Length: 202
Image (cartoon, rainbow, N blue to C red; front, side, top):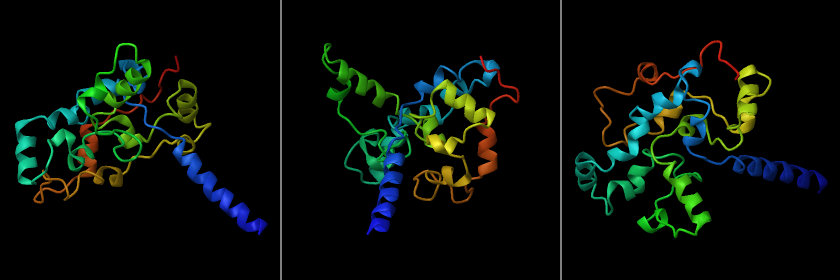
């Protein structure tokens, strides 16, 4: 009986640990990842198609695709679309909200905070590839991971792989080109935003 309780505790503990990692939005990465000397990762992302993925759902082309798919709601309000145009959808991240959610009363500080977080989860953000950042976003933790004194996965950080990209760049996407399948190496080169070899710590 004690063994069963012990095993059950380990399993529950594992789930609890996983749920501790929350999506915080790409703006939380901006502070330390915008300067050229450190790689300007945020700037490169912000100018990329990933960084503007949500806006594409407002385009005429997106509406046309949604009509062909016979979606009942606009692209930016459809799970079929926002799942690959936002950060952490259906995983504790972005949620589809109405206009009222984004316009809380002036004295509603809590409402303003959650609305700002949700706004920052629009687009294909840093955390879609690197994992929810609530535990690794601090400079101290990031430096420790960079130095090799801590492992990123213990803080929710993921290793980017081809499988990471294929979650969205696959045949389920209405814009997937069967004649030209997703090329991981080629596309990674297009969005490269590596940390300089001798990244400054200050």
